[in-house]
Amino acid sequence: MKIRLEWQYQVLKTKQSFSMKSDWMPVVHALMLSDDLERTGRLKSIDYFDDRDTRWTKKELVKFLKQFETEPHDVKAYIDGGFDRITKAAGVGIAIYYNQNHKNWRLRFNDTLELLEDNNEAEYAALYLLLRQLEELGVHHQTISVYSDSMVVVNQASGEWPCYEEHYVNWLEKIEQLATKLGLNIQYELIERNLNKEADQLATQALEGTMIESTIEKQ
Image (cartoon, rainbow, N blue to C red; front, side, top):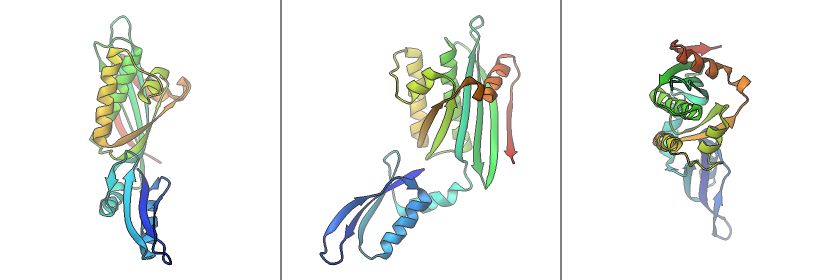
């Protein structure tokens, strides 16, 4: 999570107050700057805002920072969806990399779905199931990176392209509602298909009936 500070600062000689605003910074840096400003004795007020424009108190940020190391963070996820035009079956594959308790972890899983209309909808389903998995992991109030080789999903989910297809809109609404509930800021990145082999293989295995769910520590 990134934090921006806004504060009222009083100049010693003139007693005038000025409103000031910081750049975005990690929570730990925001608290260090706040402590430094307080030590001047000229700080009249200070507010803390995250990248969703939610106001935090200093006490809440300190608590968040203490919890941060024990909760999953620095999340990077790869998603992919596969679709069989004949059977209308879809397979989704997801690989999540994250840090927790000073260790690096990788979670992989796949799943199958029915009654979807096309491959892009399978990609949207993969994105939604990723957020459901992050909710189970306890990931919240942070920025996560999501990598996909679907140009449609990346551009529509990020707001770069409009979405007119009703069956895509339904997924987008569910995704946005869950991301808001979890306080997640999602950064989407379009990657080449050959860089998404892990998620692609998981989606293919799901369509073939091989189900996978595993979590391992990465050295």
